[in-house]
Length: 89
Image (cartoon, rainbow, N blue to C red):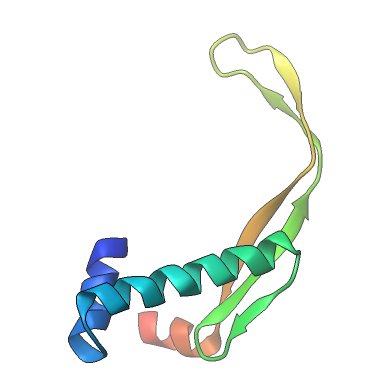
């Protein structure tokens, strides 16, 4: 499912397609803004989004085999909640 299909599904049960698009965009933007502030977003029954610091490491250029230093950086992380895990089983 992509973003457009998600918007269509929300529109089926809640509102018009235009309103659903605004709602989905708003939710995704809000999660992104909170992660940028290094805050956690917990959706009970679904899962938790958080920002995690990835350590610097040595990598390898796949074309040349040359070693290169990959700097530390922040990455988004998602941990599924119990209800979501049970649903997928």
